[in-house]
Structures are given as C-alpha cells and as structure tokens.
Length: 388
Image 1 (spheres, rainbow, N blue to C red):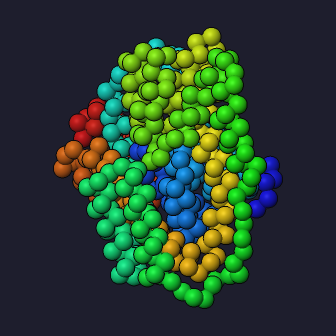
Image 2 (cartoon, rainbow, N blue to C red; image 1 turned 180 degrees about the horizontal axis):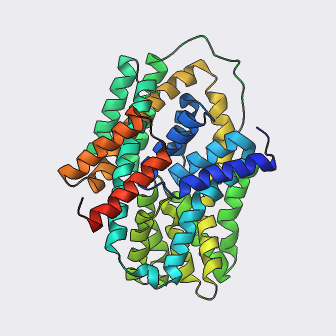
Image 3 (spheres, rainbow, N blue to C red; image 1 turned 180 degrees about the vertical axis):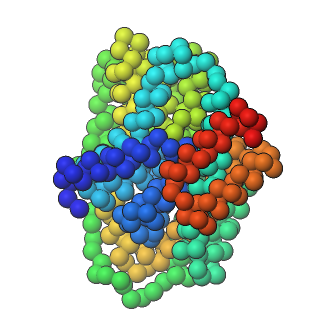
C-alpha cells in the first residue's frame, strides 16, 4: 500500500486505539499486535509477523515498538512506520507528561489500582493467546516444538539478554539443518542495509558530543540509552538511572518508573516523564525531545536492516534458519508469559479464574478485544466497589 494520506490516517488510528488499551509490557504488546493485525485485519501473515518479532530481538531498542513500527512500514513505508509509532505512543506520552507536571495525578487511587490489576490479568490472557497461536503455527514439527520448549526453559532458568541472544543463534543453527528445504519459495535477491539510516544513526549519536548545549546533552543521554538497550523496557531502567541519575531526584525517578509500568503503551515513555522533569523551563519540549531520542536509534536500525532481513528470508538455508528463530521466538513469548506477565499479575485463585474466563472469551468465543478490555476494566472497578 502506498503512503497516501488515507493510509497514514488509518495506520495512526489503528495504533492509537491500541495505545489506549495495551497494558502489560512488551510481551503483551506483541500479543495485541498479532491479534489485531494478523488475525483481525490481516495486514500480514503469521510468518512475516514472527520474522519482525525475531528481527526486533536482534536489534537494540524498544522491541514491541519496533514491531509496531515495522508493521506500519510494511503497510505504507517509513511514513507508515512513523504513523504507527505516533499513534501507539501518544496516549502513554501524554499520560507520563501529565504525571510529571500535575500534582493531582500523583495521588494514589484504590479504584485505579483495581483497574490496573484487572488489565494486568488481561495481559496474561493476551500473551497466552498469542503464545498458543504462534506455537500452533511455528511448532508443527517435533524439532521446532523442542526448540520452543527448550528456549522457554532456558530463558526462565537463565534470564538475560546474553542467554536470549545465544539461544536465538543456536535455534537458527538448528533450523538451518532440521528445517532446510532446497527448493526456494521465490528467487533470492541481495538487498544491502539502507546506508542513509545507518549513517543517520551514527550522526545522531556522535554530533551532540561535539557541543555542550543543554538540550543536546539531554538528547544525547536518552539517545545513548536507546542505542544500548536489548531486551525491552525493564532493561532501560539501570541505563537511564546511570545517565540521568544526577539530574533528577531518586524518588521522582522511581515514581516515573512505576507509572511507566502502570500506563498503557511502551515502557520507554519513562523518558517522557524524565525529560519533563529535567527541562523545567519547558517541560513539554523536554518530554518530547527525550521521547524521540530514546526511540530513534531502534527505529533507524530497523529501517537500515529490515529489507536485508526480508531478502535473507528468500534464501533456502537462511529461511530454514529463520524457522528455527521463529520457534525460539515462541519460546521467548512463553517465558515472558510467566515472567514478568503471569508472575506480576496473578496472585490468587480468583485472579487465575478470571484469566481462564478471559481465555474462553477471547479464544473460544472470539470476543472483540476492545469489548474484552471494557469487561476487564468493569471487573477491576467492581472488585474495588463491591469486592467481586
């Protein structure tokens, strides 16, 4: 699809609606995207989607936001990716900015806590549904099912980005042997990385070092964090704390981090809160600059390597390796289903019962995801008011 105004508006609105309801962190976002863009709207198939998830695991940056950007880019080029990013991130950005600048939003609310807890339970439902659907598609052979299960077990026992990268590489090696089909699906072609995006990545990272302007220093701190983070939003915490820790009170930093986990959308909008805190003379400008800086490197790398990744998929041996990676991605999602999604949401038999009912509504009865969100919000509010 061409990047027409109508296409860009459609992409923005689709992602904007998801940006209001996508609670639960990166794993849940990947589940929401799959349910919405693979199953419901069929913008891409499961194989292409799994490839985007796998690519996001190999690149630094916000994994789920990179997947969303790539879905938009598949739909309408780079402008489509930008529309997807703006739509998905805008609700979270505004909430984090308002939290940084409004005393009212800093007061805890029991009813709000109840709703947030219910939406965390919904995240368990969404991730479980995505894991089941992707397992059904990518683990039909014995070897691929083994890769998925072993990946999940390893990442649960030895969490961390190093083990994640090693297991993905091993899965690629296993897939290149076990899943090899000598007949190519389509003529193979060689596509080099987009040099412009790669050069811009370097320029954005290096040029601010030559200046001592406060705004450029703020941009540099968040851009560096976005360039070094593998593994999603939780990993960015120690980096940001090290880079901006002297510029912001520790209590305020932890308040922003807690809020980033509570609001829908990407956890990287912690940068929105911190940017507003650090640039008091114009909090909105600080929030906007910090947000763009922390997301930019991941998106530039995605633009640079996306076409090369798609081209590699056309080569039989590489395609077989990517089958192994896709199976490992399923295992990664299964491990994320337990930690942090299930472990931080389900704390009682009642919680688990609600998760099971949610799975019945979503997978068994095919209930619309937005209606399901509304039901869980009502449950969260009712649990506070009536003790249900």
